[in-house]
Amino acid sequence: MKTWARRHALALATLGLLLAAMISLMVGDMPLTLTQLWGGFMRGDELATTILWEIRFPRLLVAILIGAALAASGVVMQAYFRNNLASPGLLGVSSGGSAGAVVAIGAGWSTISFYILPLTAVLGALAATLAVVGLARRGASTERLLLAGIALNALLGAVTSYVLSNFTLTYERNAQIIFWLLGGLEDRNWDHVWMASPVIILAALLWPLGRSMDLLSLGATEAQSLGVDVRRLRRRMLALATVMTALAVAVAGTVGFVGLVVPHIFRLMVGPEHRRLVPLALIGGATFVLFCDVVGRSVGGLRLGVVTAFLGGPFFLWMLWRRK
Image (tube, rainbow, N blue to C red; front, side):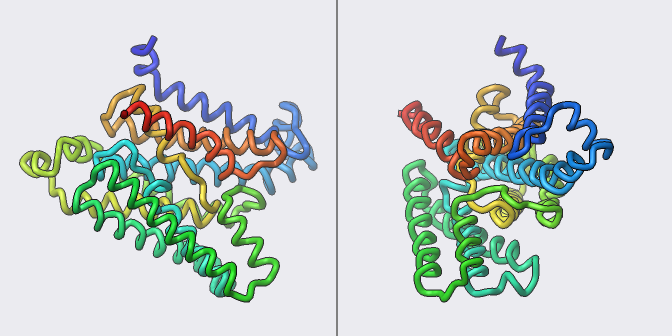
């Protein structure tokens, strides 16, 4: 059974994504039947057309893009640090992006241009990434990485608290900050889809790096001896992971554990080969976020970040227990 699942993993993942997407389009404050869904898609039912094209399609596409971005970032960081517990959330990269976005909102910079928010998110995520890399160079053990992530998350949480307590915030800005802290897909529109769309290009750039990441998992010295420019490879990996994480944060706020749960599940299914793992993580991340969004909408309107934490937290504890 395991061999069959490994051979057909991509088809199963794609089927799961299509099923999750269909359910996501049907579930909401006004549920749609399959007939209404088809009518809205073909623009034959005016009400269903408005619901689909103005509300649910943008939300669906944003969920797919941020899920793919966070899962792919998790794969890259785990390859970079050679540690399956590495992820954007645990290492503080997501919090860095969130802190950058919060500062932009609190200072009023986000009103200058629609693209100020993703820019500050990228800068915050980059600062957090550089801090983690600096600590990891002194020894990337599991304990050191986790402690570095705890310290960074605490520090960046302090930055957010400072903005909330010391900036003069309007009700609208305060609501935006709370949204980014909890993470969610409410009120996402086509502008947010375009903001997150570079994820498609960034994910495509990961494919040629698959074999090099496989060699890097053997160790930097071994990879170098096999013809890999390790320094250049690591720079590209960090840049791609940081920008993808920052774009996800800028669009949907802090959504944790996607980059930890999804790569680990597919690594158990298909093994560590990155040319197989990366596309599966992209599809699986999108499916996981869609599933969590549907659960959140179905159970009392829970925010997306809350649902992923409920599911990802126990999974992380299980991973720690399994590693003794």
